[in-house]
Image 1 (cartoon, protein in one colour):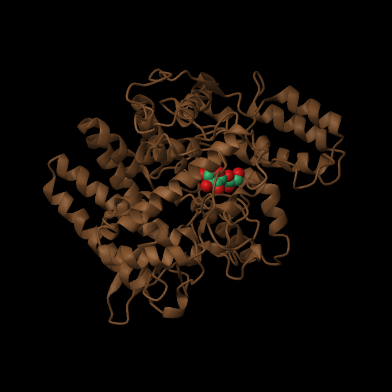
Image 2 (cartoon, helix red, strand yellow; image 1 turned 90 degrees about the vertical axis):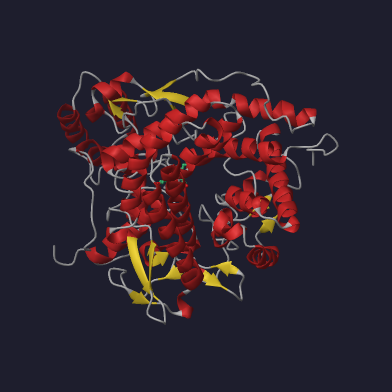
Length: 562
Ligand SMILES: OC[C@H]1O[C@H](O[C@H]2O[C@H](CO)[C@@H](O)[C@H](O)[C@H]2O)[C@H](O)[C@@H](O)[C@@H]1O
């Protein structure tokens, strides 16, 4: 098409396209503003029996036939929704996890403080709230739902996120391992593997509107965490071909970029790149509004792709992806070669090498070790900045389709938590000199806050800048520092983990109101608490609390109160 962007687009389903129109009607009809409407609640509806999509589409046509701009009377709209749809989330039913016991043996034996232990048991108990399975109706008639069928029960983040998310599952699994819920943990991996088998990549989340993108690739790390405690070689054998498929996805096509060093060496790295150039269906009305200032179709399509690509990064949204922060319309995520994505891929290479080794494929293992060494070299050349003592994201000068030559000025010198994410990997945290430099820079960075690690230093009000959000890479930085041989780094890790646990405790215990010194509405400003939902729990926050407690314990003399 003349004037349209040339990137790939994975088509969505007729139901998703229709529900986008229902979503737009809701926006136009309710006397609500864009800030109070949750567009996702409309795209999560499913078709009520006995109606089928074409019957409901004609009823919708009748409903809106006399309206201008899809605005209809609220009572008529509500009657229509009630008559033709089952509510958002009704196709996900509670599942009692069979491996849940209220007080597992040897649970958090390092946590001596009784108050903390008691609370940890409550957090552990929250897995039951978040455990669900896809209802049989989805399996029988997938076309009536945007929820995707999955073979095993799931742990959802909770709140408005009524489906499995890819990268959230990594922290969920770490927590499940601590909770000794290994059957549930394996089930999550089986679900993600089934998505890779079907689509060629693990989807952002298990919804029909997420098929056009993935999320930070942590499947190999999930398998690794489970293998580490179970020594389940069958799981590893099953995982290898799936991980190879996923590896290919991230290292080919638009995801692959080549940066040429001054001396002429080519470094292969990866970027996020969504296969979509329209408004995200789950946030369609927001995206249409954000793109309304663009005059050409090409500009709009590029903007929508960069927005969807930010969603693929898991960090939607952040000034990290903006050419001219904090101007949202300058989102240019596809032009960034991100440090953390390449950390996850380096980890995937090491994990695959390890798994191939234990399954007897020495040759394959060597191949992946070699690939990891090549990527490690690329980290030194493309991302590392000696002066800053951090690894910096790299801005592409071109569209990334051809190799381009590295330029110092293309490193993004702004400070983000992701600049420290490489310390998670043994290849970096085993180098004591490097750890010293990174610890020094981290201390000065301004990212260490009263309740943990900040995502960035910019107060943009975007979800992954302060004062919102928490640094998703927090657990990785802490784990990496703790794995190093440097005492200062180990102590730093313990201190950050405890700050984060404490802030989560405060949020939990005070139902999100609280403590004069720690206003939870601004937790991102303090680096803590995350998306923690006091009563129900939130998948990945639950996981990180339990994993941190397992790793660092809590001595009896140390108070958790403010
Ligand atoms: O509905 C808007 C966006 O919601 C998701 O992103 C956020 O929640 C996810 C679940 O906890 C989390 O994985 C992600 O990091 C968050 O930014 C979704 O992943 C996005 O694709 C979606 O556009």
